[in-house]
Image 1 (cartoon, rainbow, N blue to C red):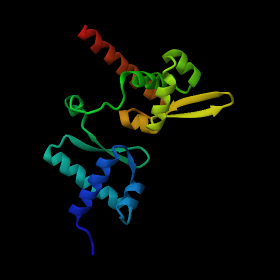
Image 2: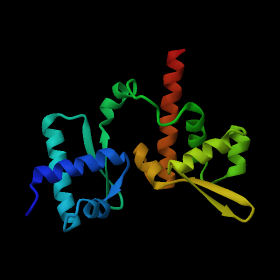
Image 3: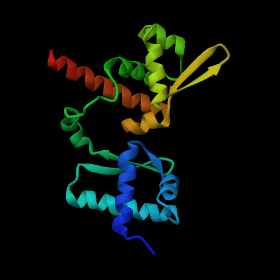
Image 4: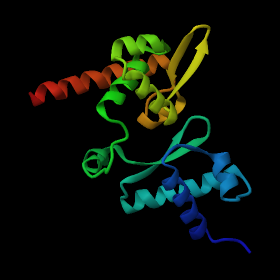
Length: 181
């Protein structure tokens, strides 16, 4: 017996919502017990059309490497942020992550020198969240952001482009801070 599109759409939406991170078409196909990634793509397209038609603040964003994520449209993040029960990152870890993203690949020792001894705790948390990776190279530990970091923030995975995007973002944040003073 074949499941209705409504049932499959509901399951797809539930999986995307609960994961809170990008998922590959292959993962979705296996989890939803579908026959092909094309079937997953068709369902994603239908769900995306429903969100668009209904004026939903949610969107399905396609990412590189045949991955997708269910996320809030950028126009709604400012309003929603006030109601978030817990921010993803507090100021300290966010500054450490920003440092890594801008200077990557960077030695762990350099991050600690720039950010202080608390940087080690921040790096552990960021690694557990899947936003950075650490790799031993001889006596040094090299840190860089993961593809999930770029996807989560909607940045390019290409390092030079990411750096330009971060520069613009930091400049915008500086201007906003200056305007508040």
